[in-house]
Length: 243
Length: 243
DNA sequence: GCAGTTCTGTTTATGTTATACACAGTTCCA
DNA sequence: TGGAACTGTGTATAACATAAACAGAACTGC
Image (cartoon, rainbow over all chains, first blue to last red):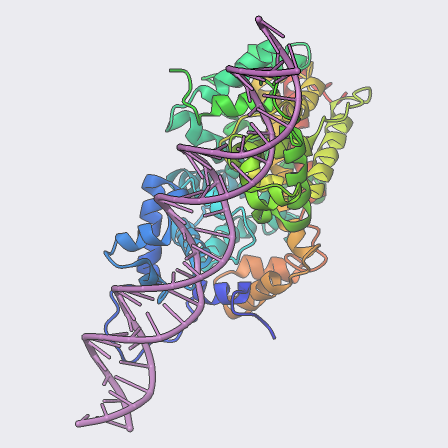
């Protein structure tokens, strides 16, 4: 009664390595890890839409059905890919206090997402959390211990930074990799056409917003959030919260 | 050379109402707007995965192919749905300064996303911006005029708040609507099992994080970002930036 | 008022996808 | 030395987006 066959619990099991080891039968050429690793390679080079069971199977010169001996389905494969691509979070140097630690962490997250931008999409679903992904949450929460923030607030702060990175990554590949100025150009044209309806945006665009030199606000957002955390921490500890 | 047939430019055209009005032929029973409105209804009640051309066509008792007379394809339909569901952003009362205005705006965004949680998914793609969506960006940027923030920074601030709302919505429906404690329970079990690897998270969980009473940090994140903006604004204007 | 044009919705067909099911060969254990 | 267990395959199905050709409707110019 705890879980149906396709439920999240079973997806959790595979992710956390809870599976029986086979004792007989032919040596398998594949494994969940190998399948997931191949899928990550495909996603990195050809995008997530290219990750079909057939495409991944082709990496091993086997049929698509062969994969089903190792992963229950595509959803589970995406879960595995996500955790595998994230990898274990690096340790944080907390000797300088929470702020530089969280700054480093955010940059680390950014780099991982930049290497695997499709993670934004795989994590935009209801899905189980993997062991590596949890290490990424562990680090900032540990770094915020002793700041006066409650446990839930520490998690909230980490999630907030994470969501900032996600939104930054989402727009980055358009400008950087594909070099598709279509969107920006179309937006510029539209703003010119409807200048009276969007006066604020027209002004901002004149200031460089949406333009080729707009960095997307990664550093601005990071500073914003950290300043905000600092303000709250200062309120809790009486001003000594920045170290 | 500006745009292929399936490019973003054409998707922009439909979104902004740039299409020729037919003068002859049978009265159409459908229109892009009617199709999109039906699709929104399906997505609201059955989720975005239920939004297939067939399912939407069934709402009008026509075949799936009939829709292609009005929308170029599914991608364009999702664009239209998104803009339609967002609707025009409400005006903001800026008489109290930028902070209450942005607070109201963020709550408005939250409500719209709550009504149409699938927007999180439709907006996690490279896609053109619609006229309604632009009104949602216009409001906070206009509210931040005169704070000393540059135009791009005003946009960055709005995007930061938006990304916070998006991440909040993404987890909300799991707990609220579906009442699926599977994920949370699975996480609790895993944390118990690997307590030594995630000490910070275990402590936070003991504090109530991930639990049923954890509100997800909407207000915390909002306060964080606004405090951060205030700190930056104060630095720019010499301390008088909160009004 | 009528012929031609244009437009709508349908029919039919294609290619892609995930994945169920039964089978053949392989390896280990009793 | 035989099952039993296990792997990969062949075949089949159902859902999906969408292309192409067509039938009927309605307007426009004559």
